[in-house]
Image (cartoon, rainbow, N blue to C red; front, side, top):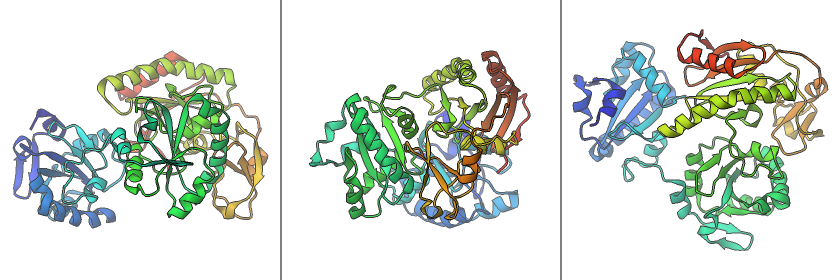
Length: 474
């Protein structure tokens, strides 16, 4: 075992017979699974016996060791739960180390398994799915396939039948995760098809539909509306691999991939909607992302947000420019370290509706009236109440009029919020820092004009732990 695992887990672990030296316990293991779990968690209690059976029957012999990292509420509960487990555990009194591990691997729910190699490097953060899909360890240690490897076995089809698998080589392409049963998908697909046909195809963009339809007949019916390629519906395994590779948790999702196979953006829907003619194709991410385009790294990193919803466009641009130099520094540092996300990310809120309004509420900031959406809205079918208002965040109801974006954005106002748009308020810009991986915490920053100096001082204070830590309201 290298010093990597020892540095991560400390010098001692706990076995059924007592303390063991980490270096001895993990020496010679092919992989180590950190099992984040707790006795009070029903899904954990259901999964633990399965994992124990798989471990004892096959996985231990394959070279896997499991280390239980407890989220139990007290040591007695930890001991009772660990008594059911045939592997090792992080000692319960190592609470600080437990929190460090949860934060480092961005564990946001349990049960969760992070699989590490003998050097302590991540093999996969989705170990639960990997092990559940291969409980005998045929693919141990479950190193995820690269995008190229997934696509090498995928069958692509076009309007005239099968397409050569190399058709995407050297091209910028989008993977469009969608389904006919999904109302937001049905609203966005005609817009994307129009933009693709009118401008984006000529810019060099190819698109591949990755279906979440419930059967092949629904897939075929939906694909008739689409002018691009598709992953053959029979390739369900490749579909799941692509979804897992990009962390797709909802649809419609539009992922943009560069010519070299690297990911340009997992939030391509917002990028394309804001630039349907492709003036900024292929939409490389800006160092400061706009909250209206999606959550960005909100769930995976510390994020500085400049709330500038009531400022004019000049002040908003100045705030973005003030944050950009420091944002670029963190991006470059993450690339150099091989990290998925920068240690600190940067965003700006320019609209009162949607996620910005939700975050204001969670941090007890002044509530703003609904802002004017960037595209025109029109009264639309209420769809049986299967929608939500981006102003008041209430779910739609069949008896409430719905006003929907005409440009394909997943954006709606109820009649009341639509009537309030354009109300003039003047709230000074304000910096805030949200750190969801660190126990849903946030930190309050300065109010007023956003300058580079103000941003740097705020981030420096955060990193030196000199700011008051507060908890987001849910």
